[in-house]
Image 1: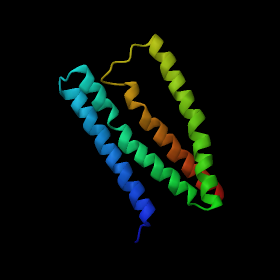
Image 2: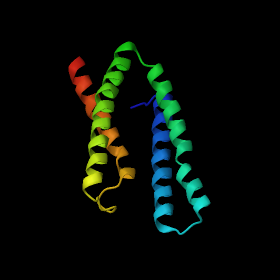
Image 3: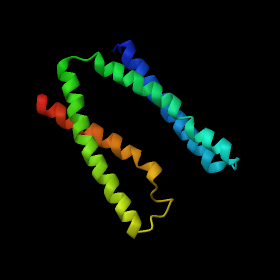
Image 4: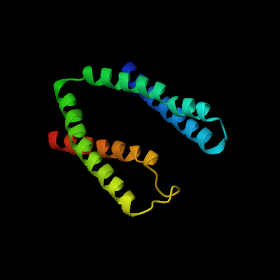
Length: 128
């Protein structure tokens, strides 16, 4: 099965971003570094993520009208539900002291990704 070049680049950029993200998390969790270095390390994942976003946007722009609509509907599903989830978690954190090992807001971004893929599945189901 042949994967078009743009999708392969998008996949590679996404994998690179995840590797860099978790590498930086490991460094920040395990090493005692000066604050300035910790800030620099915390910002490093922005570089591969920006490349991933540019590739993703280019990929969507290259899609036909139906595929664009499906992705737009997935985002229209994920964004408000993601805001709702983060709002509720933020309010609950005022009442309940979340233990950092069980839940931390730096771990909340995968929820948004999951919501997008749920929205994508629902949208494709609607158009199939």
